[in-house]
Each structure stands twice: as structure tokens, then as C-alpha cells.
Length: 300
Image 1 (cartoon, rainbow, N blue to C red):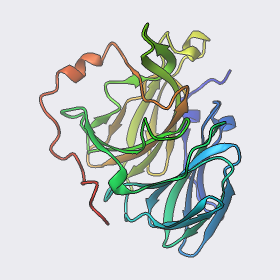
Image 2: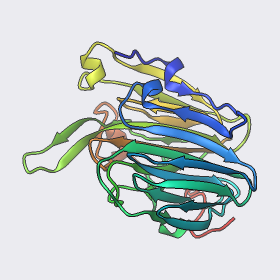
Image 3: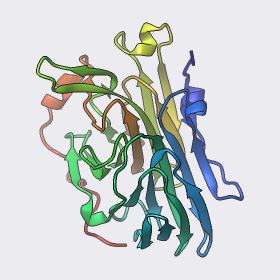
């Protein structure tokens, strides 16, 4: 059984000639579902791939790209200069899709996929299609942009992006989603999800802190491999959340962005708060006026 520490829960970005900046596989993460790649292409460059027996999403972080595939073609996906300046664009592709990504400009994007035995239609997600939610309050106010939110027509993937203002907390009160639980009437109370936090910070020196910790209900904890780790996440880093609670704080002076990719027992975000801290969300007096950091219909 994998023993998770601050060293192997934090994945650093690197730049290689192929444009691959960061990669997470089930083997490297020690989990079952999520493959994750951060990639960059210069204008005119291309990347070819096939989804195989997986559903796959391309999330454009900055710049614009076009996709040609055996399922259709989509031109000029993406419009923002920065993840801090506009809403997301993405393309969902079903299994058995062969495609080529062509960079219409210098572009940064994420490709992420999970195995599936179900078929859904390709779907382009534009900024105006992404629901915006302001969650939390006081110094735990943050902006959530839905990309493949719960209810999206796919099998397992859930994808959102979150912006946390300078000096504020996110994913708070701490919550977990590592046990699949339903009540007597069949309502889902919590789902078992793996999760990637992929970070961008608005200034080069900036950082965020993230803690991951399990409690006695978490399967790893019960198996004798509890987690209690704190990571310093900088621009381009990723944090793995195989199980447990996982709060985040953004350093004063810096806005933190993270792209969340989740997959597991259901296409849902049902979770359980840490009972020690859940009272906090009932004490908020208001929301941070800095949020939202931008409106979803703003274009870069």
C-alpha cells in the first residue's frame, strides 16, 4: 500500500521538448482512475492523441486551439490571456476518439482522461456555458467556475476551476470524499473520488499551502496508512488528493487558481465536512467583495 507524504503528494512542473509540462498517471499517483497532463504548444504546433477506452477532456488554460477528430472538428477554442482574466473553454470527447490539437496561438491546456464503458456525445464548453458560483464567506470566499460540473453528460469526470483571493482560504471548511455513502432513501451523501489540484499563481513568487489529512473513516487510515501532509504549491505544481480532507490557503499578495479534476464512484461532488471545523461556515458575516474576480462573460 502506498504511503503518502508531502513529497509524493506534490508534483512539480517541468518543461520538456514535447510540450509536456506535468503528468500524473494512476501508477504514479497510486490510484485507479485519473490521468492528467499539462501541455503547452507554440502557435502552429500540434499534438496528436487517441482517447482509447477513456472519456477525455481538453481544458484550455490560456491561448486558443483547434481540434480535428473522427468525431468532428472545433475551431478557435479558448479566448483568455490568463486564467485570472476570463472564463474557461473545454472540449469533452468520448472513448474511441482520435484527434489532433492544433495551436491557433501560443496555448496552454490540460488533457485529462479516465476509463469508461459508456458512450456520450462530444461537447464544447464555452465561457458562457460555465456556471459561476461564489462559495463560502469572509476570508474563505472563493469563485468556482463549472467546466464539467455534476450533471454534465459524461460517466465519471468532474472538472471545475477555483480562484482564491490573496490571503484567503478555499476548500474550507475542510471536506473529504473518500467513502461512498447513501442514506436509507438512496440519496448520495458522499462519494469516493480521486482529485487533482493543478495550481496557477498570479505572480512568479507566489504560492499556496494545502493540507491533506485523513480521519478514521478514510480507507487508508483504516488500513494503517494515514495521511497528514502540508504542501507548498507554486505556479504550475499539482497536489494529489487520494483521500482525506484538503483545505487550501493563498499567500497574502497572491491570487491562487486551481483546476480540479475528480473521478471515482459517481459523477458527483457529494462530500463530508470535517466535523471539528464545519461550524465555521455558519459563522460567516458576509462575502469578500473582491469575488468574483471577473464575470464569466468577460473576454480577454
